[in-house]
Length: 367
Image (cartoon, rainbow, N blue to C red):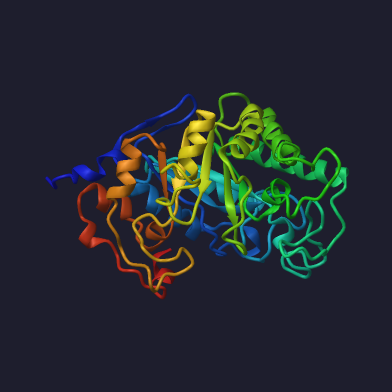
């Protein structure tokens, strides 16, 4: 029998909350792939997720999937979460993951103002955002009307209902990285003066209504995960909250709306979020809300998250120490798990030397 590495044991403790039970603390981070022609996940997508589940991942969060709105995604091969064909494809993904004992949630997504005019799959659909502003400050479209807001809130709710109906184990709402929900949360892109704008609490209203709509559709016992970040894809230094007090003001309405778990996206899990404390964003979120949290950011790597060629394998000691100290509850793994479907199993069995080397070209054969 392979000797277990005692330093990684915290990763392999069972996780139990009031709505979700997992075999260990590992989570597959959502990673956009573009392998779903016409938005429909096929057998290859089901096999991709099954491979990670059968090799010990505790919870899989799918790549971002577009809700039922014309401008929810940018790209003809990005999966969507509406329509019979696409939902049947996702139902098959769920079946394959469950066959091998895994658990899986879809990430529900709207890209908002990151979409460019003319993007596929709906070239005529304009990007939408709270104030029609790109992160740069350039005005591209008119601000969303309250009717448009209501339509998108309802679309998130319907996606949540469909996720439960076809057998998923919960949902994750994508509120991070400069996409639509984050654009409402961030003062630079939300300059509204109505009930969806204003101060930091006012800017949470759109997210709150989405969470409440999802909760109404799925009932009280279905897990809702909310992913958020400070940084944006085009601005790594951006901050929704500059102090712990501001962060508490941001998070509390989301808790009251029905979030069960927060997925706190950072680029490097080891970096403190605020001066005067070693806690990262997940640590602060847990401290302020009392909710279980997922930490993420360059797990097992030393390179930038946008790079594969230069990223080298690193020790997990700092990560597992934070986990053992209850700074956070779950750990999402992105690039490492993308490169090596057996990453969790190899780490569990003290086979770090067998982890696949980082090779960008090899990614195409590992899906």
